Length: 464
Length: 56
Image: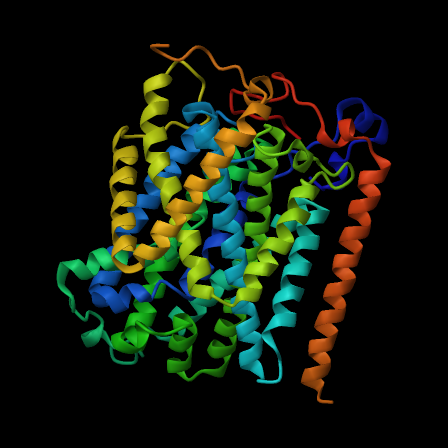
């Protein structure tokens, strides 16, 4: 389906009001989820190696993988009955009330806006690495400008572009893998005897590695934010998100394997671009250039998806009157939340100006992890309020309540690990969200319209 | 002036053009359409709570 074919006529716009359009299929959901996350396989995940060695790193990779598989199961089940933009925000609205929804909404916006700023910072640094005369800032601003314009023009084109650049970046990981001739122990570049470094800091190192293991998958849950724009929410969301999660698990494991096999673990643990460094170790110029291009494309895909998701979060809160309704406007021609997109652009740019990549990304991770804790709780509450058979689900998560319980336990463990390494950042994040809550309760709550807030009329929950 | 410095200036110029277009369209849209149209209206029927969604 082309984007043009769903354009409403001017007369229809006047009668019904501008709205988001249902044009997305599973491919776009895959592109959104994997596109946001894939950058974490090109950089960041390798700090797990610094904390837990290569063994601790792969344990963290799979444990956090379990967290995200659980998250996707819970997320997709609840998301399949809430076809509204806003993802976890919309879920919190129906399951936990306006204050929790407001907090989750703000966390979503900050998680993605800061991730977007971090991505653009990396693009600037990569351009600077090409030649010292290329300044990072103009390229940071240019990258954000192009992606903002793309998002402004329409979701279909945005996520189609994201599919192409994400797929290319993903393929470069396989190019690196096959260049090592891993299947032939004699000819392989992989250093099999030193692949496992053991646990240099014992089991505590694994706990320390968990917070960086998040990088392998951070943002995949953002697929739910476009629920309202899916042609068939009940099909597109589970298919796109599940295939995306499998893609990431495969990609993460390959990334760990080639990097651990090509780069000494002490060097790997402090590398800025681990996959690129692994490509340098192969000494093949085609592979090196492929990974350079893959790194830039993964950053652009991530920033592109982040603009899409943060704007949907902000838009949804505005439409529900939790923040001024003015932000909830939809472009009558492009069918995008254009005011939310334009409002968030300078915020991302200002974070990009700071140059504080580690602080920006840590705040993003903390915001995301708090949402995961709440999602575990919401998974349990949703089944308690609406047992199977009481409401029609597009997807039913198997093995309930294990996904919710795993999610809850693992997300709390990640917060504990974050506290060990970044307690000031964690404390600052909690203080920030408490201040936001105070503002909401004492200033904004009186403007909230309960009839606007709750749109879908679900059956009365069990026990209410 | 080196080619790299020119590329920096070109990046600034293209960024400015893109943001100019966005702001121009933003203001034009706000001016040409009423708030009722831009904010839209959603009803219970439009939100398909069964999760099957509308077929676009």
